[in-house]
Image 1 (cartoon, rainbow, N blue to C red):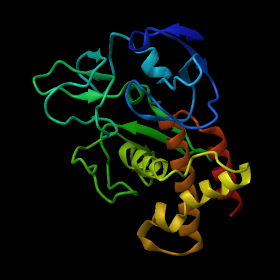
Image 2: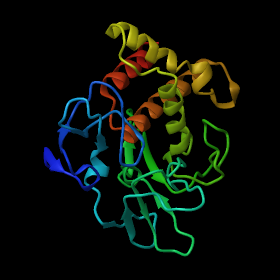
Image 3: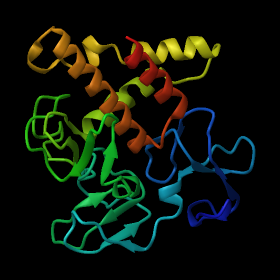
Image 4: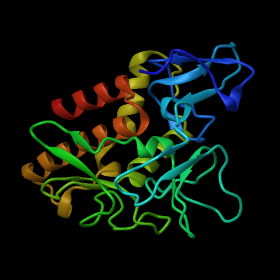
Length: 250
């Protein structure tokens, strides 16, 4: 279990305190990625320094089943050409793990901690894979927009396949547009969150069908995406619960 109050080399002049349930999303000052769930926050009011738990507790080196060699932690993104995380496809802008190959692979600390399996209910198990067995249901391609394979979550039947990059992009797009700010009352915030996941815009019905069976498949896909979002961003509990209740009652 991690310590609740730490000193970190990236912010050594202040202590950081573990915050289990942040009131709203934050931007990690380590990997420069978005977070919803547990994090370390600077104890000085108004400082605004945050670290994902995984970034704050990053080990000097780590191994992963998807990498053939040990991965070394770096505080700063490698210099030179623009680089992408080989797991999620996002830019490498801060904390990163890198292999020792001549043409090294890069990984965000959070991506290396993604669960190998997720449960989406009704016995549906999602497995983290290095590449898709078929096209992603979000982008319709086997490659991400950065033209890398990217890691993905895939159901045992291969029916539900999603790039980590695609689900992450979907949330980041809404974050940049201010969809997750907590201005106004709770109901307004929840309604805005529901609009974020309009089925006609976010999740395509397999084969473009509009039957009761296709709708059932879509609802399952919606739940799958919610579970992946939780794994990626640290369980934004309030948002997840509202959305899942919405899917199940629709």
